[in-house]
Image (cartoon, rainbow, N blue to C red; front, side, top):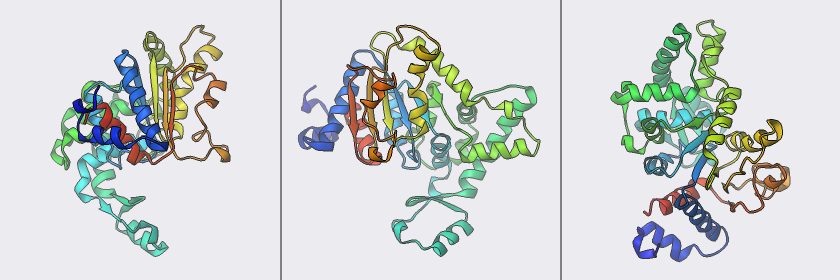
Length: 327
């Protein structure tokens, strides 16, 4: 595709992003695009606080245009996109967050603000508002003896329309809403390590709900194993990892599990790999490991297109998505 057929952001990238991390960015974007053009599928993994960073402004359109086929995310990213949807105007930005004293932090706590770097999430308008509504969905399932995955409960509350009265951003900028409308497959490893996960656990401790009402991480892995086997043929499934941690570590392991532990022969490796991270390999960090290390674990093939952009995902990912969307 020529530079003229693309929008101004893509044209800027193609003209100026020629070397080093900038070149890695455009190489990764073109590799992603090539994979899709060959009818490949793509998994995106979301670590950190990408929902609070409002990645939905580009990720939602990626979902609508079928440029992502499955997502793995932390419980925080699952819920924080919805929190931003219903409480955006109540968020507080702290540009001078590096200068905050312990007393400043304490005052944020007393005012019910939970800080994520320079952005503070309002407890009452975000956490408690969502809790009030999601509790009813959980409780109904618990009473009926039904069981669902964490993301399925979120889909239910979004598709019910209950939260529309609270919307404070354009709903087209919510990636969770876009995902719910498409019933996009999601896996959420370690969901318990999230605000809603903690809240659900508190209800179980109080005896108001059964832990079994929420499907587990092992069930996510068994579901993913089946999904992978159904979709890995042909051009295969790519792996676009935003950040590190469990959101990426959990799903990438499905390939070696299938052929090493389940002894299923001829399972294709991941067909494309890109990681956006600035983690440092020398500290023993798997999140910062170069892609070739994953060959030794049976996750990537020698011939798998591999990219790593050692930079800030909040800067890099929207630019790659802009390229894919021809913005």
